Length: 430
Image (cartoon, rainbow, N blue to C red):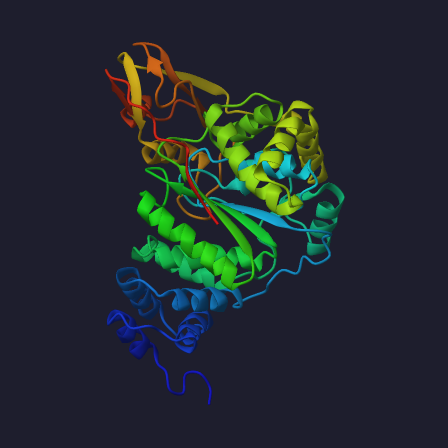
């Protein structure tokens, strides 16, 4: 008897609406039917809404992840010698950590075989940031990809092959039906893609706060624990690091500008928060890949920044993928935004600031939108800093003065009293 002979989508929707547990066969029927087109958008959206409202059990989550994982190809990276370590971030404003971590870990001999996406949101994705380097190619064959990792320990490409088509289709529907913010659906979306990408061990940066998908620590903790359990169920070692996204990471926001900040970091000049994040994620990754303690891993990472090996590896990586760093350019018009009062910066509306950066062209509204690589913002002050009236708050880079610059000031809460900033690293879950 085939799946579907005794199952139908209406019964599945009603079952989930009544808070009953779905079987793997029912989940397979719904997901595969939607991918193949026999189940309609309105039916799948009803099921997704029922999941959002009524949650899923761990067994349902494991089943959904497995069904989505096997809806397409699973990459075979067995030709890469040694342990393959991957890193994922749930995303945030100014989050350029992958571009630093890849060459830094590779300089220690850790294999980073990384697939990343383009951004659909308030800033570009990792692929967009790297493509702001003239000539840089994010497309290569699986053979070229594995050869590059074997040769220099690091390659970064866009999605290759037909990986997790179920996630692509279901995520597009979630995006337009108000069903994005569901812990089980977020976890299965992330983990099905990570498992399909072929890595042995994965470190996940779970962003928490106003500039992140997950707004509070309770939900972030639930998501992280669920992803670790999905990994264990699939025989993969996962570490989740919960990090603060109540203000942008670093000072540079925008594609070419963020690459500039990565270059500065790898040459030894960095912002405190970027350094803290990179060292925590990098120590976790190196400990997994080299079977050393996190303390030893951090020491080796610091040494390779100081001795220039990290930047040398970045330069080697960029050249291997056709990029020319000498032609990296900011937008030509620089405008200084000054504070209208004195005081301490107590809060930055990170999401609103990210939306402004998208509005000037650094992010996308639709997936077909073209990115303006050179536009963006460089912050002169961060949360906790004191600023004087008429002192520079930030610089914005545009091709023309084509926006009302005053609206940026509304993203900053400046008060009389100093408020201790929240920590950057909240928790590590293994």
